[in-house]
Structures are given as structure tokens and as C-alpha cells.
Image (tube, rainbow, N blue to C red; front, side, top):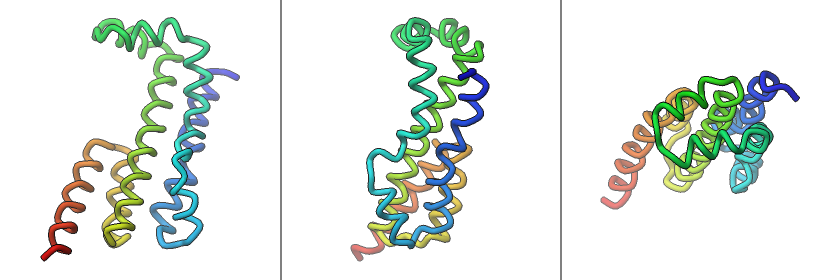
Length: 143
């Protein structure tokens, strides 16, 4: 399978989970599916294929935090695709936690949905936005 194909399929492998969390958050099957810790496994498939094929280069890039080495790795198609798959899987992992927390703390889906959408594109900002909303919700429920 080509690097281009693996890159192209990474996000579509995660998309059904995002769609469930954003558009069908109250559906019983969404909760059942998202309760599994294995949700990020699908977008990790391209990661593992790429990581195994380029383990030496990947290990060099991550074992020695050096901007030049990391830049060289991500400057290759396989390096960029590997990091992309890593990001997609971990964004989904974070979003899964946010979804489950929003259900537990009864944060309205009209609040959570846009934050999850933001998390798709800018996960650190989405995470901080969710943590703020979650904190306010928890504090207001204890008053």
C-alpha cells in the first residue's frame, strides 16, 4: 500500500466516530461504541504500517528530540503521513474522552458538538475549550 493511500485513508477511518459524537451524541449505540478504548485503533492502522516500515527513521526522530532530525523525518512523505496518523488517532482519543465526560457531566450536545468540531482541526484549543466548559459545569452542579 502506498504512503499516499495510507495518508489519504487515515482521517476517513476516524470520521465515523467523529460523526457519531457530534451528530448522534444521545444515540445509545454512540455511547456503546465510544465506550470502547479501542476506538482510535482504526486510524492507527496506517500509523503502524508506516511506523513498522520506517521504524529506524521514526525511532531516530522521537528518541532524540532534535528539531533538525524531526524536520527531516516529517519532510518526507512517509514521515508526514506517520505523524498525521499519530495526530488523527490521538485527536480521536482526546475527543472520545471529551464525549464521555460531556455525557457524564450532562454538558449539552450543542455545546460539546462545536468543541469536538474544533478539536478535529485544532485539538489543543478544543481540549482547553472543553476543559473550561467542563470545569464550569462541574462547579455549577456542586452549588
